[in-house]
Image (cartoon, rainbow, N blue to C red; front, top):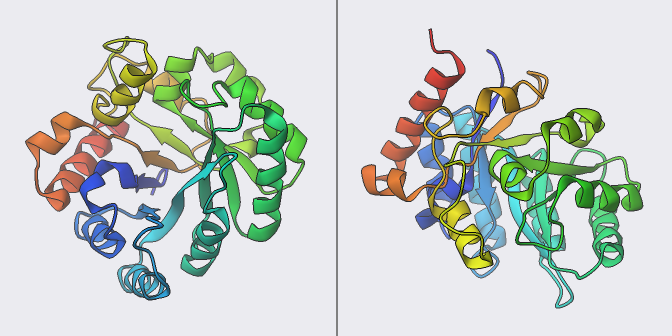
Length: 261
């Protein structure tokens, strides 16, 4: 079967408040696994039950639930953890807006203990967050010290943050329970925070259709580590307005990139 490939929730942002439709779309477009976006304004216990039934009916594996936004004003992490456990997800994604690593580590530790051994809580590093690089993320997870803490490595953010492949290769692979894969232009349109965020939301590409060393990146990780296809792209949205057709087109393109023969 090869590496497990999962449809990231960001591919169809128009379904962010309708996770049942997103899971349905992922299944109908042929994916084996999927992410789930937790919208705190609309998610209810009925949502959890309906999404779990749809996952069970389709056989889709819920690879991750996102996103927990850590910060001094509080977060929805407890609710996201509980949803992820109820859905049978493998991972939860978190990002941080705390000014220093101490509070980030403290809160991550609380979430890890709530999650228990069956669920990994993964901190993503991004140039425009408080945890900007892999080195920053490693510092935080070392402070956490929980067996179920992890780091989410995204190809785009690796490149934009200046994190090297040597740094990834030198880290404990156990810290990377899954990876986000994509392509993009080698250089963004600009380096301001606003431009880098727009780059992440609109300018990604299918692996092999941009300028990043996608196959060298993929080779850093054992085939047992799943890849979430975080191809959030204005071009994809414009080319395939229907979410299911977009998800299917992305799957076919990614499978061709993984196995060109």
